[in-house]
Amino acid sequence: MGTDRSDDFAALFEAQNSPRAARGRSLKLGDRVQADVVQVGRDGVFVELSEPGASGKRTQAYFHVIDLRGPNGEISVKPGDRVEGTVVEIDASGVRLGRSMGKPSGAGALEEARLAGVPVEGKVSGLNKGGLEVDVAGVRAFCPLSQIDRGFVADPQSYVGKSLQFIVNEVRDGGKRVVLSRRAVLEQEQKLRAAETLSGLVAGATVRGSVTALREFGAFVDLGGVEGLIPNSELSHEHGKKAADVLAAGDVVDVQVREIQSGAPNKRGEPTTKITLSLKALSVDPYREIEKYAPLGKVARGTVKRFMDFGAFVQLTPGVEGLLHISELGGKVSHPSALLQVGQQIDVVVRSVDAAARKIALAPAPDGLAPGADARGPSLLVGAVVNGTVDRVEPYGVFLQIEGTRGRVGCGLIPNAELGTPRGADHRKLFPPGTPLTAKILETGENKLRLSLKAVKEDEERADYDGYRATASQNKLGTLGDLLRKAEAATKPRR
View (cartoon, rainbow, N blue to C red):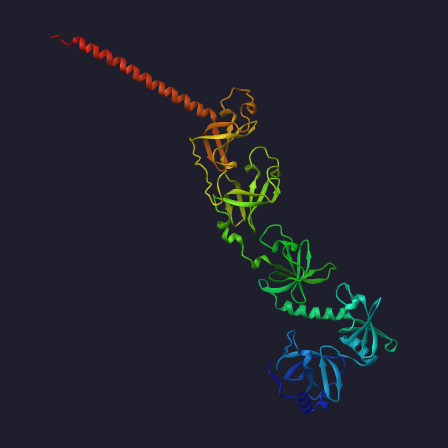
């Protein structure tokens, strides 16, 4: 930092003709000035005011070193840095600058601090029903409860005995009535921190902050004088998470800046800066390894998370959910909750995965297959004869669930015309759910499987007829052969 601890600051400043330091320009208590750091000593920091005086020379001044220490206790400036300060003292020793007015003496100094709008230091000496009693260098002052802090103060007693910074709001009756505000100091500090923080914020940056509040729609995070919001949608890759499920007030978190919107109106219509943050952007997206959690055509174990009228969403891993459509549940199911419960573990088959759209289609796993097992089922080819059981009966036909399958992929329709029943037959009585049937596959396609009972019967009849014809032909050939042999024998001469 360029600190020379061997220098005695008082001697150093005396060597610079301190008593005449302020003569070059007209300074008064409370002035805000810019200054350039010349030297950092053991006890203080020697500076020159940026604007020269009437003589063309730059006015010399100093800070007590404590005024320029950072949060870690180290001196926060070095030679060449420009700093801002308030003129807090002008006397024979020179011009002293500070971050605030320090401890003024008398009502006159308090009035100057009020006009300059700079903080003063006071010690809280007591408490009354309206606020805090504060001693400011022998002057009794008052800080209302509403001006103690930026928010609600639950325990004003905890401030008694502390030395704090205040803004002077009012000085009356020669100093007999002095009203202070600590809240104004905190708001000033917050604005300075906010400006500094905003100057370094860019979309995409990773920053650290502290969670200040949890709401139904997300979590607020203090980034250093300015707050950003983590919407619920940016908390986690897992669907449906609320702020209270993931965070607690006071948590220190690393977040990514998603968007900075300047000039956005607040609730009072005032322009402000809206910062949107993301927690999930810094965690691994499970869809990058989707084949690990949703292996296509294989059995996976998941947990039922929520219902919609059209199906159930099943979580395969946090952040990865698939849809088990109601049509995959079989029978006439009006709502998935009729067969499933939230929190229930079930085995499913991954039918399809669209990683870009983050959509996964599931079906119930066949009985007896463990997670990881291949569940592509039997090959459903046109012309194949399959066995199955009646799933449900509709006015236009009967749905058959083929053995070795579950869900709509293996559930085919036998239209009324392919049932081989007399006209007007009551199919609900003839084919109640669970009835075993053998059918022939007539047509396959995307979510389309058409079967026929009549074709199986016709194939059987054709096979019987072909067998009969083959047998009859053999019989005819056998009789003709016998006749020819007999004729041949009759024509041969006898010996």
